[in-house]
Image (tube, rainbow, N blue to C red; front, side, top):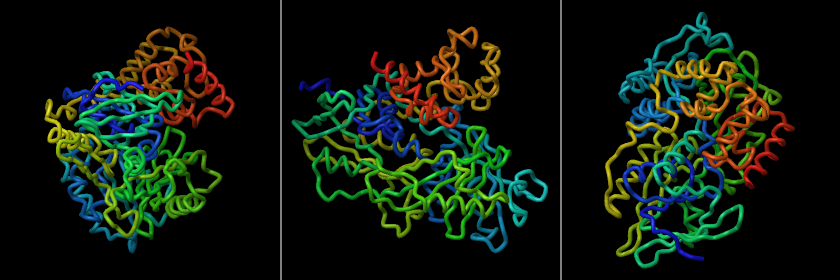
Length: 503
């Protein structure tokens, strides 16, 4: 086993934090490698509630710095990736004698409107649910609500776009590659990796190592580094259910529960409603996480407290769970544990430094990366300057408010597309949708139809440009077409992927 190129930075973990750090670092001139043991965003980063939000409820726990940073990031990220991020209005029904008094909600929303430099997002307003369409699906006891702004994100796509941009800028990006050992030798890290498909091993050298393994961050320290009694993160399970469409309004709902938790009900993929999340401590291996019957009952019951038509288990068409690696701050309840991130630099004299990344959330990943680069600069010397705030992710090179115009342009160039298909392609790929369809003058030119709105030209793009290797990668992370394909169609896609991946 030969030792390969020496990199400035080797990143462990292909979730949003790892990919964000790799992208920022290579853009500043560092040489970078990243290894992800599975598919990108296959853990926490694709199991979120998919919001770019300030975190209204975090104000209750006095997380003012986190909320302000997150609020400021909403419009930055929207401008950076207007295809996979867009504004969403939230309706917070209020009932007298409920969990939180009206004055507290108003104060929280006032802070929400004014803490974060909001420019494009509309301000909070009060709704009369007896007349506003938002009241139609709710029980009649809810006559008043507050409406405020946040954002929606296709979380898994945001991760893979960061990985793509890092690769296009020169980073070595390795998917399905597990770090098996990391040791300090002669002022460098020697990192050994194993290809999960072939079993082949390879060694790399790096001046610095970044451990951004998310829920596995402690496992990496214990396994690859051989450290004992490691405990930095509190694992908290969050589960979501997707049900048949419960309302036609484009706004989402913010529901307060008697146990002081909150859940969201969000329009999802046009035909569905996403409901979540739960918050409970998790002690098993993160790879085994799945929704429990208790969580299903909790989400159905909580949503049914608000919707006139109850949410039943039979309504569920899909569910997903993920483990959040929250920094263990000793909070007594899972929902009270900090969502802020913590960066710890392990720097010993004359030895290669290690940066461990704990916690974090989708909304603040870019700022986390900037702060990580400050610590990297301290440890191995600064290169370049902060640059991502004004950058664009691949496919996002159009104005934040110009999504509809992009769809119209795609339809004009490809008259055989229906609007729903064009909207989905622009939402997934932005301006890259034109490249995906560049050889298609008619519907037949898109190649084999796998079901839903998924065609061969798109699948080929995902294999060749976005590291997709399996039907699951395509159907549940790169797209959400798994909601629309039958089991038989998904099996046919899997066969196609197996042959294509072997080429």
